[in-house]
Image (cartoon, rainbow, N blue to C red; front, side, top):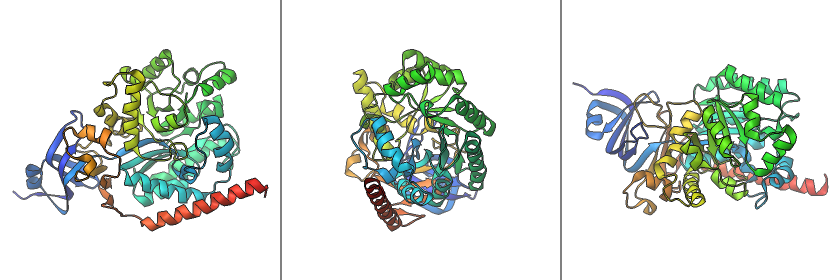
Length: 447
């Protein structure tokens, strides 16, 4: 009997499938056709059943689903290191927002290219973005080969992108329609910034639009005690209760940060079916506090991971977030058994896929989309291997990633980006630095 043809065969040393049983396979094969996984299993069996023109030798590698960054502001790489060691509101209002008012599509493109390059290099294959000029980011994501879920940030006051709420919602709907030309690789979400920067009408209408388009709805929520105090002053209640009253808590809701939560608010989130995106390194750097992730997990809340932007985190590396998330919960609860490696790995894969409404991502299983990465097990930091999930969360730093594919298409392999040249990123960096320096001079001189 002749072997069945497939597009690609991966021969892996170890596969962390992240399937329902969390199976770990040794000397395994993965067959891929038309961007989807045909089969995964023992190499001898897979190699007999399938033949492929493109066969990849990953025998010295640890293979797993591509990581998903559930919350970032990709083009904030423009401001990496620009304003550090400041409280959130000072950082936002006095340093970041004034610079963002001057951003244009060109700088968004340059900075976004750097962000995509960093994420690809460190194993992220999909990101959920809330920022400006997301039409530019959509084209950029497609051009780099990444998967993206994009939402233009919505504010309760006029911006250079829209003058009123109706224009803002039209902008989102237009982005959603344009993204359809990219197929399933680039999609859309609705992304109001936060309760204290919007209003009830915006929240209600944006949520209704998300339901109409059947796409995720994401918002910064309860990031600091100061935010909670502002919410009480502005609306007479705390942020979670405000969203609950507005009818904006449901399985469609992707709630970012969730640091300042009471026990009752954790219960409310759990009952709603909403997902929470934990951003541990950004929260630590801005001294925002520690999200009660352990309590949320006890309530079966779907918890994911995000980096936030590179201006508040200084990096877009989900490997770093996994380790930080695990260690932060252990020390904050004084319980070393809290947030074990497998639980945290789920946050960066399966849980994230669920939050974004893309259940065919996040695990290596038949019929799922072939978003897959591999880490080089010859790297000293990964030697020897006893428990692969532990290595991913506690030992790996991202630099061990040697292979990435999205929908069966290789986008990075052994130091080479397949869709762009590294020198392009360096040129983007130089142009951004020149722009930032010029804008700072203008601000200082009043020009």
